Amino acid sequence: MSDERTDAELLQAHVDGDGAAFSVLFRRHRDRLWAVALRTMGNPEDAADGLQDGMIAAYRRAGSFRGDAAVTTWLHRVVVNACLDRLRAAKVRRTEALPDDLEERSGRGSLVSAAPEADDPADVSVRAERRRVVLAALQRLPAEQRAALVLVDMEGYPVAEAAQMLGCAVGTVKSRCSRGRARLAALLGVLAPEGEAAHPPGRNPDAPPPVPASGESPAPP
Amino acid sequence: MTEPRPEPRLDPEQDEYVRRLLADARHDEPMPADVVDRLDDVLAGLTGPAPVVRDLAAERRRRTVVRLLGAAAAVVVVGIGLGQLDLGSGGGDADGGAAGGASVAEAPADVQRESAGVGVTREPPVPSGRTPLVVTGKDLRRLSAWRISDSTTLRDLAADSYSGEVPPVPTAPSMAAGRDDEVSLNGLEAELYAADEDRRSATDDLKRSPWFTCKKGPYGAGRLVAVQYRGNPAVVAVRPSTGDSLVVELLQCGTATVLRSVTVPMS
Image (cartoon, rainbow over all chains, first blue to last red; front, side, top):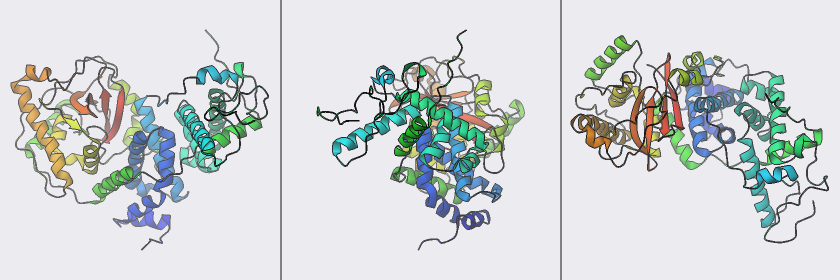
């Protein structure tokens, strides 16, 4: 039988001693929290560590929740901060190896295609590769910029809510997002060499074609 | 000195394009089953009854360490076991913004690492036994489900994190009754106890243990423990406490690259 209590009721029940309430609450939101941890940390193992840290912190600090934000916002804040704490403590840049030709191609136009999606398996493969490249580049960003982009651009949270999750001002989130996107653009070759403004594929006649599948002619941009 | 290049500015089209790429890379799969199990175990450990601890000798040793070193007792969590983790961030916000305890907020992890003499080159630790002290993901999950203050052996090891001295031979390991998880954990504890005995009687042999091939490296200050993680030798470092918490790290052999780290409250 599903528990129909609201998030706030569950959290309060937990604070009041209901031994099962926190589990119900966490289970309700764990998939999205996992997604945030995974994209922030960059790999499943570190994400599991960070999410566990955050879960335990939330469990222990539930009594400090003042109700001035949604419970999910508070949960995300705790988890994101746990992940960022881990990243800071390790002082290890979680980098993913970029494709061998990334550095060479980054000055010759975008590495990722804006071609519309299709159900063709070849297009699915291209899309998967594009995601991989984007995620690898995301890991090259400073942790704070990465976290901001994960919350705003990936998870779709409003900037104001992301600011609550990150514990900073709205302007700070906007700045981190802006700078993070600019860095990503440079890494992904959205920008031409020397920082000249360029445009995504489809608008730049000099852009290389999308990665072709199995030797077939590349689709037009 | 070369001036840093200014970050490029994106026009609205480029900005929107990057945002679409990010949105497309959103993770939509549910949490993996193994992570679900792991977190359920941890939650069960948080909500379940505490195992009974009976090791008064360790308690007395701990109080002695506290008096001599001016530090509270700590525990070692090998690998990624967390137990009652209490993290903190620079904010120290009571609204849950500090993802954990104010203790770490008062001593940010990077400061802890600096004060821990991170980068100080040291000889590798002496292995705990002739057979590897193997840490697996499953063991770590069970460790994390424990109240780590209940682990006598781990407390003993951590109590010497300052001095680096080998703890005296303890009495019989405490075998806390209760859940099935404890069988595996006490097996780990028993091995650690045996390691102390072996270490005293055959230190030179242990130093040549074939399973532990770590060389000198920048392991930093604190107590070092030789372990095997995913088939490879590794080093656990219990950093000296900087306040209400301490950092335990799993380090790669030789390079001392941090593979895992955990911040635990001093209790």
